[in-house]
Amino acid sequence: WVIADMMDFQRAPDYLYLDFIEPALHLHGAMGKITACILSKIAVRLLRGIGSIPIDRSQGVFLEPYHKSLALLVQVKSLAIFPEDPHLPENPENHLHPFMCGFLLLCGMYYRTTGRQLPLYPTRVAKMERKVYFGLPMYLAINDLNNQAAIRRLCGQLREAISYLDVSGTD
Image (cartoon, rainbow, N blue to C red; front, side):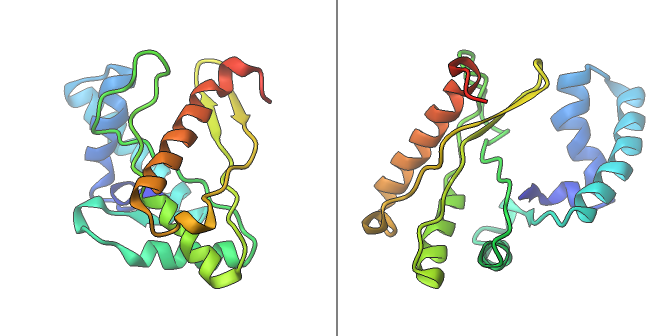
């Protein structure tokens, strides 16, 4: 899943500037905008080329990405979902932003379609170390598929599992 702005040639430069160029590269003004324009042309092509599914939070309920995602999962394909909310502040202890938990609705959709539980693999990209850490699969209990509190609890458990990946030595 990818922020929809990053899949659109017109919207990507502004999003990239605000989300990455200014805060991470510390490029401001014209130089930052030019860099965002150049990088966005590459990023949009790359994200489209690898079959990313655009998510547009401004559109409210968005079922199309769920249906596309479910179709891929039923074909035994993998999805990479980064549920961090970039609009909320990062936790200074684990460097994770709070999670948006809507992606967990796929668990119920997958179970209703296949009769099987969907494994969720906690994954952490450690930018400074240039490493990717993977945890053991986690599952949303079948009896919790329609329980919002249980979904939020699993979301918190996933976030906690991810926060320990780089310090636990799990490769």
